[in-house]
Length: 94
Length: 131
Image (cartoon, rainbow over all chains, first blue to last red; front, side):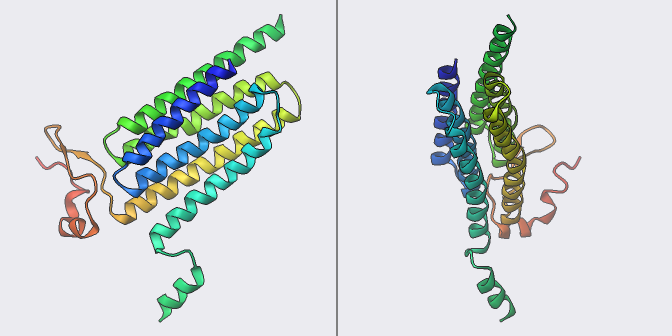
């Protein structure tokens, strides 16, 4: 039954990957990447149960945190064209 | 007997969660514009993730593993809406207009107009249909 859930999650990841490749705008690609990240967290948890190694759950926790930080960082980069807040403030006051 | 019932419940949860994940990904692939795709992708974040994690919690029983699974679920519960809100706000600020239907039901509007095009016709979004 864990194998069936793993297969479903893999199908989900491949469909989202197709959208990430096709996506006309950068936001479509980011949305697909975010979905792939969520599915990776679930996949890590299910594979931990499938192989009887629940240590994988710690990896899932860390991956979930990295997923949010990555999405917000890429959005910030495409919004400001840079990630450095102090440089942006200097350029705004100039 | 009760362990078999819990097993069946967890299998149902896992299968339903996987099915919701596939449905959400199909929507992500097939929907016509960015905002509808976001609507479809949120199914994966809420129902898909929730049901899969609930099925795993039922398998784990009352243990540290179940607590960790609950933490993962809580993390997805809070970070999913934050990422979705940031994405939608960034897309709106970039000037990505939603695909709207006019009075006779035909879809109008390009999928990615620039900010300059939107500035030329500012009332296009607020009044999509005039009789």
